[in-house]
Length: 148
Image (cartoon, rainbow, N blue to C red):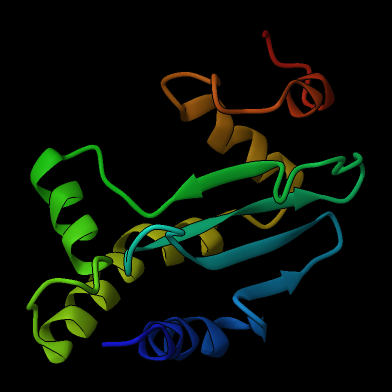
């Protein structure tokens, strides 16, 4: 499998739910924030990362790509290992198996998140459910008046 096929998998899932593809990014530009997902290639090997999150329009982005940023992964170690294997194009997983499993993980992990969060209030509720906010920029914590 090549990067183009990974991009096609993302397009197949994201475009029907309203995302538009711009280079290696898929975006939905909303009133309060932009939902974004991108496909990133490792500089050192044929390994990819699927990153997703939000750009809050009412605060400056500064040098950030997204205000709220997450990578496709899992808290379950076995599941997280499998996701990493699927995004490593240097192994011998068949294209069909890779595509089917990646679609499954995207539908389980990413799509529900994007469908549930449509306002800043939704986003704040999601942030408050996280076990920690260590990966949230200070400007976002201040915006939402979260304890830092």
